[in-house]
Image 1 (cartoon, each protein chain N blue to C red):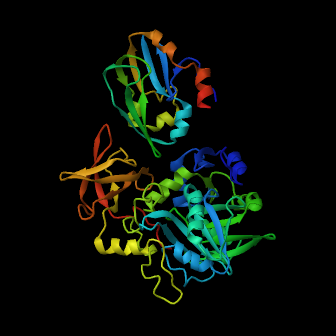
Image 2 (image 1 turned 30 degrees about the vertical axis):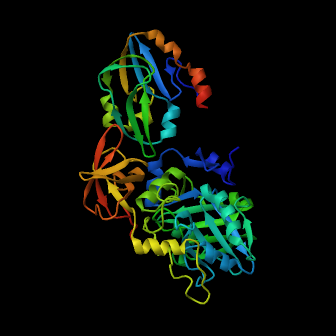
Image 3 (image 1 turned 90 degrees about the horizontal axis):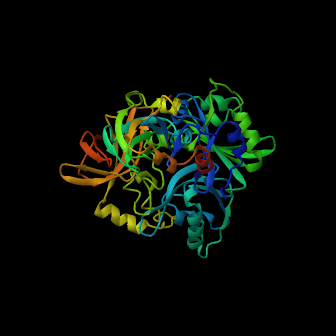
Length: 369
Length: 125
């Protein structure tokens, strides 16, 4: 039995086509992935992301627990900040990529839907003797991402504070008497917000956010299909594609999310995988993530082999026909030092071979306003 | 959703319409909705003999690449060039303008082995 999010009925009424995603019945598209993609790049789109796990941590040792769990430094986070971080295993490979929110007296971790069960078990292992209350709030809450260049202007009608948030900042707002958390974060390469709210408020909130209807509405509902093409253009990793338990954060180019010296300050604590990752740093990488751009029509897909005259180089992790660039794009892991930006490589498609150009990530960056 | 009555279907969502001794092959509305925006069509076989179960074309959408199979033996006699030039025709009109291949069949009775519209609709949900 697939789980339904609190937005299910609303999305269904708006013409969503649903797909099973990690045990949840989620909108994949409302007709055209390309149109939804362009809607987000040019104006605004609203995504139901309630399937993502939301876990609250509180108690005397909550910070120490998170310090052990996460690759990113936690001790210097201030209330109203979020940070992108990784959860690694002892080998330094990635169990999940997450967003951690610091509230006044508790923390919230947003995790991938596909990794939620695995992580809940992992939290129990990490907890040990620490006094920390772990509260999985996924099914009592809901979450939407509202993304695009016109989103801040739209949200400005409801709140002056939200548009003044810094990137990765968040605030709490009341909708009538109910509290919601609004962060300036996202997974599309555009400006925008993600909103966490009580499951019982979901319908009221989404009707408010999408009150302008019709073809020229600033914000329209979008599905996971467009979310995937948007994040690919923005060069953002997706767990199960660019990230998995055979990949470490440095290979994925996520060095910024790893603090190898977390334990040196007074409040510090070594994180799980820290020693292994120090070793990786010293010994060098086995693979590195690159972008591929194709002058043609065929799209590389996950699992296809990348090679050149010298032999096999690596493997494709994600690919799509990029609506913004107007050509197929892909991400791939290759042996470090074998190819660089501008080099040509071959992708084996099964029935054919295509030429691709290695490019730096991301493929797309929003203009700064 | 109910699929056109005048053709036979495969579980993998191809339709086959017999006129004389020629079968026109395409993909169903259900398949189109699963694939979403179609961006590229490649005829793996553009002429010559094919057997039931052979992969005859590949269709790429924004989301995925799918192989298209024939449900009947015969000889490929025509590929829909309009669809190759403009793959979105399949999204707009999968049952008429969006056809993929024409196959001259050796044994029309083979079509009876494929799914009826009602059976196809039942399994495609």
